[in-house]
Amino acid sequence: MFKVGPFDTYKTYLSLKNHFTRKSYDYHKYCGKSRATVQSFYKRKDRFWFEKLSRQKSDQEILDFFIANFVSCTDPQSLWIGEIIRNGETNYKEWQRKVQSLSYVFKEESTTLFTENKVNDIFDCSKGHPLVLKSFLSGKISLETLVIYDRIFLFGNDFDKKLSDPVWETVSLKMKKYSPFLNIDVFRFKKTLKEIVVGE
Image (cartoon, rainbow, N blue to C red; front, side, top):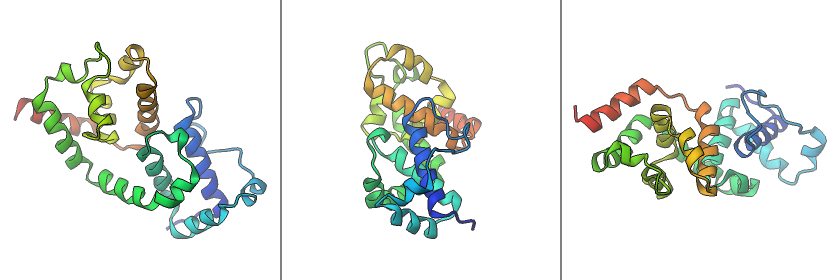
């Protein structure tokens, strides 16, 4: 298990915060780089928490830990470090459970939505927020399922053009920023969805 130091843990936090809150910053494109300095790190009152985290988790676990916390909050822009320190481990464990059983989660969440509604109606945004977005906002489907739908139906760009409200803009940005971190077999999820819709 490869472990990183406290300062590297802090840099991972900063670069992921930039990734999830700034349109112009891409964690993968910039290889997780940030302008953080060792001096600024040691001036932080919460540096001991980063030190503790770096001792407890591997490099990949630290990355996943911060991803889990940024995607589980309503608005990554307003997420502050104190909240992560307080609820971070709970969010991380819930995220792990969801990602590890993603096929089951997707099927469960999709069954109700796609058996009770026509496909076109689910993604119709001519009268405001479409059903798929309402389902996400009400907690009926997860962000992961929403991202998978976008990989299958490519609705995100269409919504970006037709919906000009801060709620969708926040969700849209989160989807785009989260998607590269999810390893999704689109063909397999398409097959699951077809079975639900067609009833095969």
